[in-house]
Image (cartoon, rainbow, N blue to C red; front, side):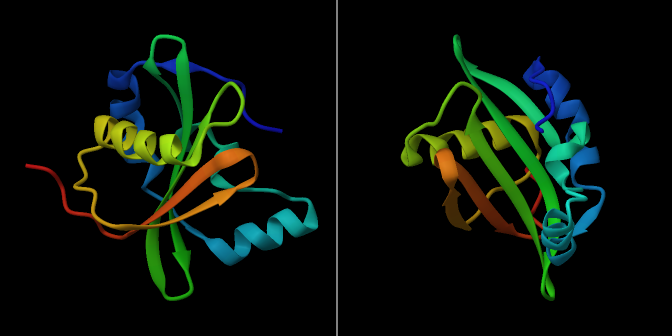
Length: 132
């Protein structure tokens, strides 16, 4: 069951963002937990979940975590529209805009895939440089 929706300001999210990337999750462990019913993953922890208003009446949920996938670390960011599904291109545009607004990271290229309901998942190489 997802965490309750809690719309917050960009300023509040920016202050919380460093906690979202403190821990490095193991992607294989997350999959195993889901398979066994434990279901411990970043989206179940408030420090990784950011509910943000992009435009009046249009809100998105970002889930941000650092994950180890095999031997490499990635910044994993998922974005979904809080009300219903969104077109894939809109999801991609909002991931970049919202992540830039709440972090001090220079975003480069990423791997992208979509899960059910149009949720965009972006994987950025880690570490990312800081904006000056």
